[in-house]
Image 1 (cartoon, one colour):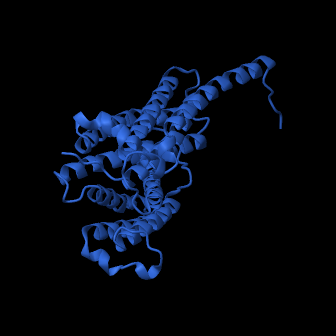
Image 2 (cartoon, one colour):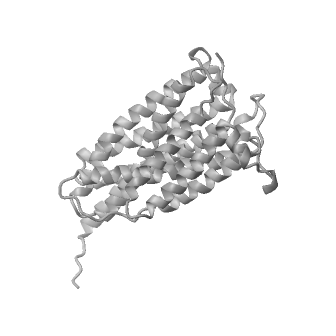
Image 3 (cartoon, helix red, strand yellow):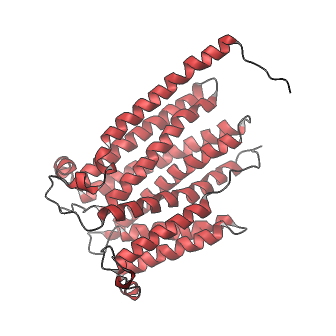
Length: 335
């Protein structure tokens, strides 16, 4: 087989062009990681100096919720991008291997762990004997926890069946259960809060999981014109998702931290500190998304947009971890 060697000038150009993009990406990652150190290292640093007590098992619960949120994003993102790909004329039939069965299995294990916490009165069980499975049916939180366990089990069975698209229904049930769980009936206007969480969680799952699967699809479609077209279509939808995430996030924050107390609570409460770190992360992700969109439309090779898009996926993963921690911290409700 005859190989074609690039000219020295072309080789030099590639060497000089790549570090600039990689260097900018690395700089963004380092700066944002420094801003997010408090939530990344767990609840203890975030709680320090606030006067708030750490609930038992907060770190473990945050980890389980992180796994659950991340695993939820994977199958939803695959379904989302596959739908976009079907709308592209002349798109190659090939698709990356689905990670949905593994994600559903991980989410099932995480949901089972969270259900065991609910079954012991929101305490981390030290033995199996402490878990009151029957007690789950006696409380609202217990029923929602069981719903999530069963929904992920059904989603996993759908993922390995001949009709993986049917897993959208059990996954939708999980999103609804999480939205209801996050806003107990004792809260002021719980249905409004659940509605905001429903939209926020759905859009963020589609954004993160969709970008991951879009990049995997682009690698498989390399050399075809359908790759940049798919990324461009995803970028247009992602702009709408980002707007919805921002709007619902702001509204949810204002409900929990009234406008007159936000400046104090973002520094004096653990919830506020982690929320501030999440805002910084989302802002950085939005900047990377804009950078990728500019490259996609103006660069000679549209696929150079994959460089900031990969960094965007990494930061989205970190934002999911921060969200998992945020759900495990005490909410500073002040009316």
